[in-house]
Image (cartoon, helix red, strand yellow):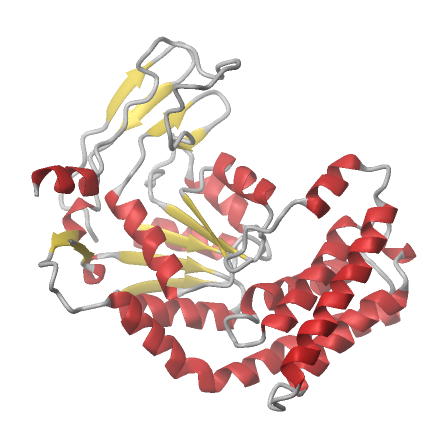
Length: 181
Length: 192
């Protein structure tokens, strides 16, 4: 069984609602996190992202100035001086499937629909820590591999060209651990 | 915080894309514990959240007041980009937060209001009573929360509001298939 040492992780929380920030701060501190930085809009979050270099970003979608989607797109700039690879967990009241697709295409790593729960948040954090996905760079996309599963039965046009080894899965620490037990 | 040395990034180039694999920089925060380890971070967090619950009623009142103020601005100035945006933000926050605060019926009514704002072809043509009833319902649910007999009433109120709102939206969007599809799509929110 694995646990996360939250006290070694630095979080950036971005939500314009002070009550939700308080909830998130409470949950993260209860998990054991000590470094939780907060911003109430996307612009401030981007500044804090460059300054504090968080390990994990948790962001709302709807926010003033620029929103969580734009924040994700600005972080996922492959040529930027900062870290474009940090996991981004989008925590949002938007609960339509199409929103998940839009968030995914902006480079969001995990999507968590409100209402928030301790279990839901913990699972998303565990997933980004233990099961990182390789990044894909195309003309129009830079972000975590959007293919979580390799569907052998897929029939249809391929969006990616270039042979068989299109996806290079990064070994999951959890899977590795299971095979060594 | 977790980066002591720069990670080596491997890049594999294909015809129209690159696959970039970097060593997991967060690997070191994972530690193996015995199966009998009794520490339960989720239970600890749930307990801490319960410790905040004494503040939830007040927080919910603040959110409901914000929604009422946004509605008052619309009654005074009509729908503009900024009044529409503020009404949507206020309703959207309640949709996302209210269940956590112990007001799931308020969340359901707020979701119904969000759907009207998002999918009505022209907000000026939405019956003003339909919006007002959502605002009043949310305020009543928050105000009357302490009465034990209000829970089922609140649920029924939210359910009926959603029914009326959906009927309006389906009629108003009968020629807009992309909106109809979104209106009819199931929610992915936990518990739905």
